[in-house]
Every structure is written in structure tokens, then in C-alpha cells.
Length: 473
Image 1 (cartoon, one colour):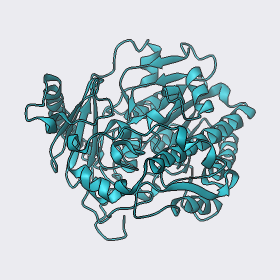
Image 2 (cartoon, helix red, strand yellow):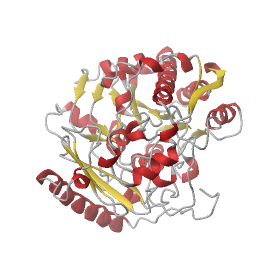
Image 3 (cartoon, rainbow, N blue to C red):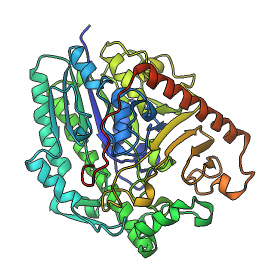
Image 4 (cartoon, rainbow, N blue to C red):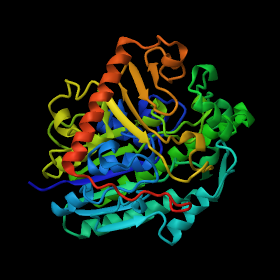
């Protein structure tokens, strides 16, 4: 049987609540919504970490941050854990990656062809035009990139991707393409005409909550974000620009899909669409992201579309908990390759083919932090200083509760049924705020931590380089 092609498309920093197919009626994502109607749409997909490098390292190594030891932006991926592209290449696939995929943090091994955003040339220039916009003293600046969409980084990346598709097709091999858009990663700026696509006055304000019910570290974070300086309209403008960036990528994804279709490649191609993590976009009065384990940062879109005619491939909406770490075994199995016995995720395709009637897991785990580097506040595109944690945060969540172990500022817990936006910390509200459900999650975090450490020791993982020098990160 002919090996299938696999195309893994990725937004950067797109949260699930900003997706039309997941219920957002304000954003415009017609292509993504159409994919969801043709494939398997996962409504409860979460990342293993809420920031770029740890999340991506988990997808490409198949293990959680505590195992691969990339828990923050100062870390590089370990040299002695094989990465997904290496396994795919060794298995006979032509492999190529383009865009924002963090090669500078050692997530670059095994590809036949790679085109990073920061390689000098038109793609780099358009990317720099984006990341240099906005104010560096507040987290909420937003607006227009002074160029048309055809000259924006997402459109230029698409042009390069289409050439990459031709090279992959010419190879005569089955191919694995990983296409990583930078939008809607802040700065919250977008080229014309997407800058005026959404009227800020018509958008609801993100849920902010009462500061007294939120962890104390967030007070300093809001100060560094300049939250008190932002008017309600400033926040709505952030949301409008964020939605504009998502709509921009949605249109570019259609172009990629059309290019595959025009070349007759979709007949034997699996398409996977997801994001590395989410964004605050004004929730909790915060912007961008932080080393924190919240719903808005961890909950991401995930769609898998089989080739036409695949047995058991009817469209489905799947409401069980899944993790982006599941993509490692899923992609390997689609390629007919062996899944390493240490992989901590599950093969989603086999599970769905069997009916997906039984949940894969009763809880999800995430990890982030242990930051000992030198970066401060890195607006307009980065994290507030107070959002970085020197201790390692570990969390677990079910559909009804979430729990975060925070060695720096104290643990947190939320009732997701009554407080889905995690705006009222049960443990801060009352010393007796814990519940049997939260106590059970605490025990699960203990157990999962022990499992991760045991696996790390069994694999003999050698941690990648750490950055402790100003400017190195």
C-alpha cells in the first residue's frame, strides 16, 4: 500500500476560543471551519506547555517538558532524543519545514529542506516588519502593519511553501511537510485589509475577573502590561487585530490546500491543523502569554482530515481530552513507522477509527517554567517579566477542574464548570478551598512527575544548552 503524504499546518499562539469551528461567532475562519466539517474536529485539545519552545519540543520528541527538559525559552532540545523529522526521514519520507519552528533551539534535526523565518531574504524582511511594530512599554498595543497582505509574512511564507510542495512532489517519495505560520503571534498588528476586517466596537471584552480572586503575581504582570492604561476600546482593538491575524492565516491555509489539490496530491494526503499554544488577548487583564497553565494558554484547535475515501473517515466532532503530544505517535503511525515505546501520547487515528468511544485519559498534564535566564519584559511580542517563573509549574486538568502547582507563588485551583475562564482561585479564596476533585489532581501531579523523572532517567536524556548570558536567549 502506498505510504500517505502528511501535511502538518500550524498557527502560532492561536487559542481554541478564537476559532469559528469551536464556537466563536465573531472571528472569520471559513477555511478552517470547512476543514473541521470534513475531518475530525477535537474540541478538547490542549498543549503540553503554554509557550512556544516547550510545546514544540514535546510534539517533536513525544515526551513532556519534564522529560526532554525544555521548560522555558532559555532551553534547547536535547541532542539524544530523536526528533519526529529524523524518524520520518529514516522511514523513507521526504521531509521539509518552513516558517516559525524554532531551529535556533535545536528543533531542526532531520529535515531534507528547511526554511526558517529568520533566514535573510524577503521572508525575513516581512517577518521583521511585523515583530518590530508596537510599543515595548505595554502589552496591548495593536494596529496596522504598513503593507498590503500580499507582502506580509504569512503570504510570503505561503509562496515559499508552494515551491516546497513542488520540491516534495518531485522527490518521488511520500512527504511530511510541517508548515508553521507566525500569525497570530503578537505584536497585535496585521497588514491591510485584515486590520479593518473586525470592528472593535462590536467585539465583547475578554473576561477579566476580580484581581482579589486572582494570584498575586498577576498584579505585577498587569502593571508591566500597562493594563490600567488601556481603555476598553484598546482591549477590543487587540482582539480585533488578533482575529485579523487569524483570518489572514486562514486565507493562506486555503492557498496551501488549493496548491495541494491542483497538483492532485490531496487524494493521498492527511492534513493536520493545530497551534502550539494560546494567548491571553486581554483575559485576566493580561496580554500575550506567560509561564502559566491556564485554559486560554493551553486550549488549542486541532483538526485531522483523512484523504478522501479513507475507511472510517466520516467527519466527527470529538469531545474527549487530547494533547498535542499525541501528534508524535499519530504521525508516525500514519507513516507506517514504529512508535518509540517511551512516547507519552496516544495514536489519535487508530483511536478514532475504533470509534473514540472510550476516553484516552481522564486528566491532561502540562509543565512550564524553571526560568533562570536573563530576559526581562519583551513586549511587544513577548512575555512580561512577572510572567516568568523560576520554579517549575506543573498542572493537571480534567473537564471539570484544574490544578496548578506553583512553587514560587502558591498553588492554584479552579472549578471549570462554574468558572471556565479560571478567574476565581479556589485556594486563594479560602484555606479550605480545596475539593476532593482538586485533591485528586494533586495526587495525579505527584504520580505524573514521578513517571516523567523515571522516564527521563531510563532514556538518559542529556539536556540541551541553557542560556544564562545576556543576549544569548
